[in-house]
Length: 94
Image (tube, rainbow, N blue to C red):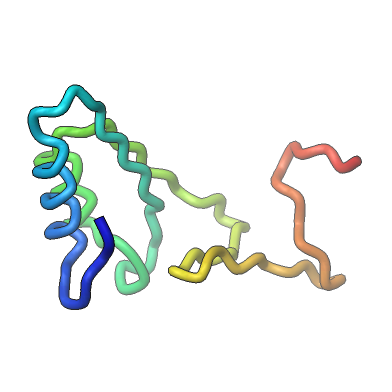
C-alpha cells in the first residue's frame, strides 16, 4: 500500500491489516524507535502498534553512537572525523 497525502501511520497500518485479513499470512512490522518523537513514531504510536495490531512487531533502538538518519530517500551515513563511514561494531573489514 502506498503512502498517500494526509494519511497517518495508523491509517496506513490499519489499511494493510485490513487487506491481509482472511489470508493465511503473518504480518511482520519492523520499526525504529527514536528519541525525537517529531522525526518518527512517538511513544503513543508504538504503544498503539503493540496493543492493537495483530502482527509480529520488532522495535529497534539505534546504538547511542549511531547518528545516521533514515528518510524516504534512504539512510544518510554519518561520517567519521576522517571523512569515512564507520563500520558497525564487530564488523570485519576486508
